[in-house]
Length: 337
Image (cartoon, rainbow, N blue to C red):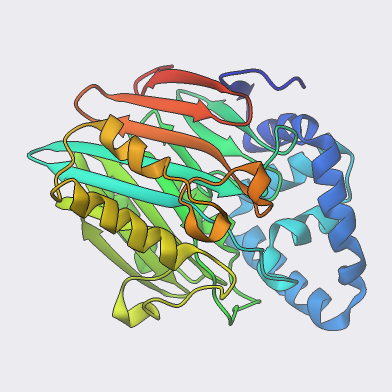
């Protein structure tokens, strides 16, 4: 398949859309599967892998078929790719650096998100998945499922995700990508709360979302989740803010604490008042001299890049998607089909 801008459309069942995405990322997906394949020979990893696969067959069979479809579409070994996708079993991910600002004021919600990481135009694309009467957009890559970056759905859900570094991983529990994929299916906050109440994941995450005209943020870890409605201005990067979830803990090599503090500082300089999406965008574009003192990351910094910036404004129901790798942008309606 060819990567097209502003998005690539895939249509069909979970397995069929998986096949199409596998073809889209064939080279990168096969490289990842090959990287993981040798680890399957290790007894402890194989044991945890079999336990996790059994849980996925029971609890998330459709999403497992999607993963198998990706492997088949790319011509990769199914088990090797599944292990690559279930990163908690065999390794922790490298640091990521997503930054989020939410403004919720008098019924209006503005969300701004920098999608940072080891991205390239070869391993990422905005994908529209259509199945039956529903659809969702997701910034897709071969190492995660929908829900692990940013997107929006036909139910009016807009979401962004922050990766959370944990020193201890529950390797025999549900991989975080499969749980997040289930949240993308939700049509309202009640459905999200119900799924959070049954959560049992191998790692953790932070999700920002707007649904039903309100903004929320979720910090989650293993079998615990804290969900709060956002009122005013809220900032999140890649460390926990809730004291009950290891407040402030992060990868020692990450710049998450700097980004969080700098965003808060720049908001204070604006009088703790943000009225327009452009003001949110200007903060997310702040650059210093290196990765360690920047919010917006460039290739020259050598530690990942800010691949995309997305801005959603509920007053217009529009989402502005800027792909910095391609130097192109597009304006979506969240009701677009």
